[in-house]
Image (cartoon, rainbow, N blue to C red):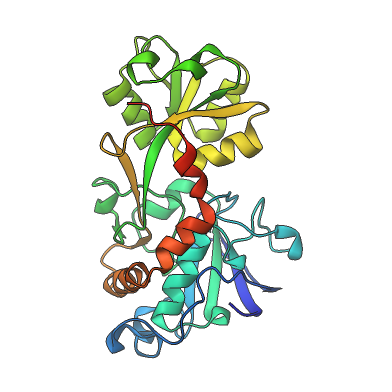
Length: 303
C-alpha cells in the first residue's frame, strides 16, 4: 500500500463527523495490480451502489484491538481512534478490508473510515452509513434478518482464558472444565458454547461485554472466560495482568464464522463476496492469516 490521505468519521447513533488524516499504510493486502473482480464489480462501475460515489466507506468499532486491527493511533491523535489505527491496514481485519478494496479496484486513498462506538449499531435494523463494516461479527440467522452478511472471511475457534497459575490451567479436556465457574459476554457464540458444549455444573456467568468478563476474571469472581481465539490473544496481551490461554476448542465443536456487514438487501453484497473470493483464491487471505494469527497453531486443543 502507498501513503495516502483518508477520511475518518464517527458512527454514533447516526451522527457522523469527518476529518482528513494522513498515514502510511501496511502492505499486507497490496500485492497485486489492478482489480481482481469481474468488470461489473469494478470500482469504476459501481458508483451507484456506493454510499459516496467514487469512494469506499468502511467502518469498524472504536476502540478496536489486535490481532484484528493494528497501527498506532498516535500518528493522528485528533482522529479519535483508540488502541489501534484501522486506516493503517494492519491486523487481520485491516488487511482483509484493504485486500477487498484493492480487489474491487479502489486505491488506498479512495477508502474512508467510520468509527462505530457501539457494537450493536452495526447490525441493528435500518439504513447504514457505511458500504461494509468489519468488527469480528459472527454470522447469525437472527442478525441476518436485519443486515446482509458477506461470506465468512475467518472461522474462529472458541477458547478458554484464565489467570495463570490457577487450577483450571491444568485442564486437558472439555470434561475437565465441568466443575469450574465460567463466563462470557451476553449474546455471543462463546456463551452459547459454554451452555451447549461445556455444560458446567454451575450456571454460566453472563456479562455485558468481554471487558466486563475480563474484569470479573481479573478480580477472581470466575475461573475462566470463553472468547474467540483472536480475542483471546488480545486479552492476555493487554487486559489481564497475568493471563493465559488454557486451550482452544475443536473446530468441529462450534466456531464463530466472521463476516462483514452490509445494509440489508445491499446491491453491493455480491461484489464484496466476489472480491473476497478473489482474495482467497489468490492466496492473499492466507498471507494475512499467517502475518497476524500464526500464534493460534501453538494453542493446545481441549477435546
